[in-house]
Image: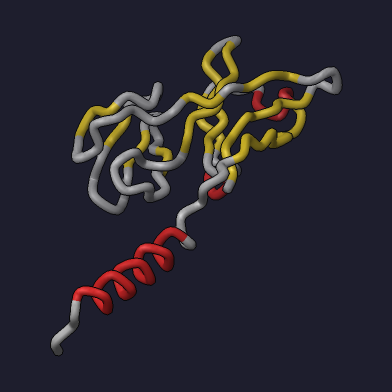
Length: 129
């Protein structure tokens, strides 16, 4: 197929526009009510929000949220019995704090901002498209 310069530019612009339409351009912070903080009283990793992009983690008095999105190719990681995390897609592993212990991921899992509101509910600041 012979394509002249003008046709090439038009086709290239169409491809770029099509690709850009599938990329979220305005990521917005989303506050997610994870329910009563008392529901997370025991130490460990709580996986019920994995599909929403995070795990709730209790360590002593500390209650936090760690991203469930692998930093390598954005697959959902899985919590392990020892409270570490494993990516089933390419084998990356993370310690209980979200730090990379085995690649191919090179970036740690994000620790998301949390707070407890006046009703005693855990609020997790995640990002949604």
